[in-house]
Each structure stands twice: as C-alpha cells, then as structure tokens.
Amino acid sequence: MSSDESIAICQSGYEGLLVREMEALGLPAAESGPGWALSGAPSRASQGAPGDRLRGATFPHAILEAPAGLSGERVNELAHKIVELFADSLRGERMEGPWPCIFAGAQEVTGLGRRVAAVEEAFHELLRKKLGRVAKLASADKPRLGPVRGLFVWFTDFGRAQAARSAYMNGPSRMADDDAAPSRSYLKVEESYGIIGREPRPGETVCDLGAAPGGWSYSAAKRGARVVAVDNGPLKGGALGHPLIDHRHADAFGFSPGKAAVYDWLFCDLIEDPHKVLQSIVVPWLTGGWCRRFVINLKFGRVDPIALLADLRAADSPLGTHASGVRIAHLYHDREEFTIVGTVIP
Ligand SMILES: C[S@@+](CC[C@H](N)C(=O)[O-])C[C@H]1O[C@@H](n2cnc3c(N)ncnc32)[C@H](O)[C@@H]1O
Image 1 (cartoon, rainbow, N blue to C red):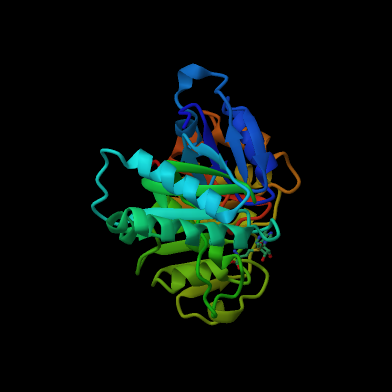
Image 2 (image 1 turned 60 degrees about the vertical axis):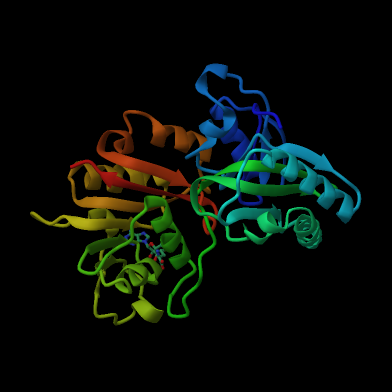
C-alpha cells in the first residue's frame, strides 16, 4: 500500500467536481471513475498526507487511506487476494471487537453491485476458514464520521478493486424516510444533523426560510422544537397544521427575528442564487447573531461550485469571520447543491 495515495469516494456523477476540489487542495487525481478519484502524489508535499487534506472536504463521502490496488478476472481470485492482503496486514494487530468490513462500488455501473456482493460473500467464506475468530467480528455497518480501522474495499470496475485498512468517514450517509415527511428534502436536514453533531431538541426554536412544503420544519417539529416556517407556498403532509409549526406567508429576504429574539437554529433551503443567499441571508443572520447554529443549503446548478467553495472558505467570508465548526458537505441526499452547517460565534 502506498501512503502517498488515497481514494476518495463521492456521489456517483459528481467525480468531476471531486477531481476539481482535489486539484484545488493540491492533490491532482491520478485516475477517476463513477463515484471515485484516486489521488496521485501531492503537488504540495509540505501540507500532509492526501487523506488528511481530504478530511472535511466537500465532495468526498469517505477517504480510503493508502489503498492497495488488486485485480482479478474471477470472483474467487479477487476474494483470495483480498483475504491475503487483509491477513498480511493484520500481523501484530489484535481485533478484539467488531470491525467494519465494507465492500462497495458505484451502483450506477450495471452489474457491478452483483459483482461486489459475490466477491464479498467469497471473501467472508475464505476468511472464516482462515481466521474464524476475526471473521466473526466483521460488521457490515457503515461507520458515520471520523477515522476508522477495518477493511474497506472499493471496486473501480469488475476486475479491479482498491483495498484499505484505514478510512476516514466524512459524514454523508443515506437516511431513512418518514411517511409523514412532505418532501424528499426532509432527508437532507436529517442527514445534516450527523455532520453538525447535534439535532433540534424539545423547546428549541427554529426559523425555516423557504420552508414549503415543510420537510425541514417537520423534521424539527417532530423532535419537539418550535418552528417559524417562512414561505409563501403551502405546507403539506406532517407539516400541515402541526401544532409546533407557525407558518408565516412572507418573503425570506425581508424576514428578521425582531428585537432580542435569537433562534436556536436557522434552516435555509431557498432555490435562489447562492451569492444572493450569502449576502442577504447569511450575512445579516450571522453578523446580527440572530441564530445559534445553522443548516443552509446552497444550490450550485447555475454557478461554478468550486469557485463558490473558494469564496465560502475564504478567511474573510461571513462563515470564516462569524462561525465556528463550519462544514460544507455534498450530502448523500444533495443533488446540485451542498449543505453548510456551523455554529455562530456569539
Ligand atoms: C427547495 S424548496 C424548500 C423545501 C423544504 N426545505 C422542505 O423540506 O420541504 C424551496 C422553497 O423556497 C421558497 N422560496 C423561494 N424564494 C423564497 C423567498 N424569497 N421567500 C420565501 N420562500 C421562498 C419556495 O417557495 C420553495 O417552497
């Protein structure tokens, strides 16, 4: 395994943006494909290992560190190579508790999912014979956030995989739907709680700008928070008539909490130019201290997302000067948009 390389996994279809973000971080991609990019040697060696630089970046969902490339035409051949690599790398390491054992590949590549499943099954069978105790401790549960040790295998195509013992999970994860949620957008705010490490609590207050049909408002209200939902459009499903949701038919750009009010949360999911949202919502809300923490979704369909990221990350941006713990993530449930979370510096 080469410590100079990392493979970053992203949402399939966004690998072009992942590659551009890596370049902006001084990590030119040596190769990429649906849902992944492999970093080559860093162009700015002084700034640490590639995996470290990708932690907290926007497009990677997971980073497989110092992966080894494996190839094989047949399922058993690949499984055998993965078992050998894993067993060799275990020398001197005690596996005392459950360890993540994750096999994956872009689901969009026809047939690849079946191939991954077949190799995974063959791997487990071989591992049970070779290292029965360790095999019993393998867990297919995907860790959510932070550094993890286990086995992570990413298939770049039918006959090739990258296998790593260490990975960094950047946070994005698939969320469970709720039948009462009025929109698909509900899943995004649910996912964002895992990134910020906090979710609305009973009695907290939320201002939801661009709330209709009410997925985000419903998500907060079902946790017992009181929500002011600002949108001229109608609320639907579980948000309609919810006793904790106060629907205001108003323009989000003219809305302010009024004297002495501070919301625990600002939610903002407007289909608007992201620079307008930054200037006319993010700046007044953060500089005015109108909220304690925020979840803001910016649509990048009509702008260059990498240039937008550079603006957002600039030291003098409103996020840089007025917020801490800022993360900008392309969530599992995001499309042409990314989600910003953070805490306002009082
Ligand atoms: C993507 S939808 C929000 C979805 C919502 N987060 C949910 O979970 O159901 C964007 C909403 O922003 C609203 N919107 C756009 N411009 C607005 C403005 N200036 N003031 C208030 N709402 C606005 C639209 O009416 C639309 O309902």
